[in-house]
Length: 147
Image (cartoon, rainbow, N blue to C red; front, side, top):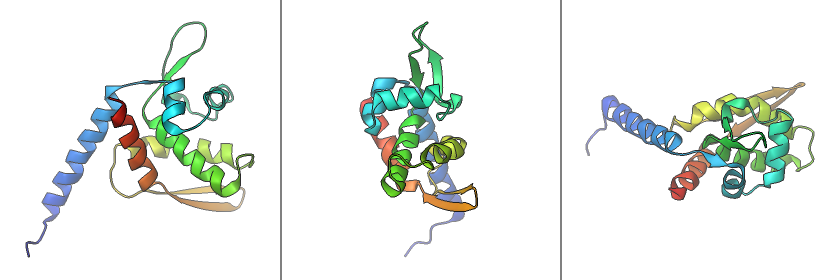
């Protein structure tokens, strides 16, 4: 059996990072597209932008006075993770929005990094661990399928 070297592993990771960045740079999503791909309500997405739950880093531009933002592809991963959190804690849980706010930057970082990712969130004495590797990979696939 051939042994895989550290250099070969690093080369694969770098190639995957370039591919993920290509997907991220290739498109922006309307609110309706982002909601549909992530399987959430466009109205809920609008509300989360309005109340600051969704960080501004996910917004690419304002399309005029109507406030119809376009989103970076990473929004799909964030919304899908929010869906998983809602499955665990309930869609009306008071923890949902603070968790989404807490992981926003981490999801942006994880999007371009194919290595396994586990997020730790500390909220008012409660520690939550989220393995987001599969969700982010699925989000990338869904966005890539739009092209």
